[in-house]
Length: 108
Image 1 (cartoon, rainbow, N blue to C red):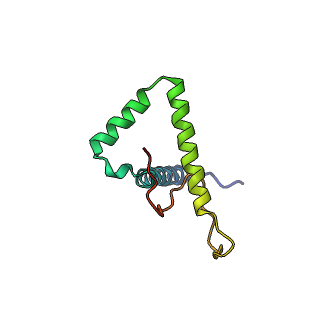
Image 2: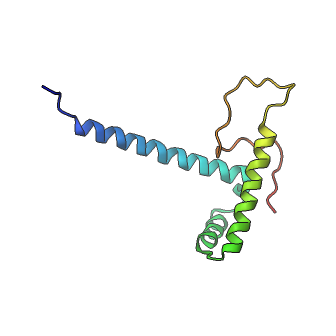
Image 3: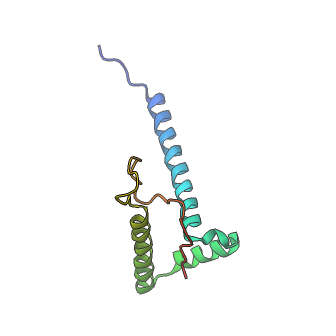
């Protein structure tokens, strides 16, 4: 006879995974705000800018913002790539995870 499934335990496991993913998303968003220098803005300014971004339907503007964001991440990955004279023994950085800024990454 087969062992019955423990649906409560499976649901609890899925809820735990969901909570962990949400926490990781919040952490990564915070790291993104910090790495772009947007932490210098007040919460009201940052919220207002994000609202405008979310409400913008102009495809040209959104595409330009996306290109600028992609360039930001590419420049960061090049800066964090190990050079031949550095010790590359650490774990590789995950795409989309912010690394501490090693200089002012201006977003003007």
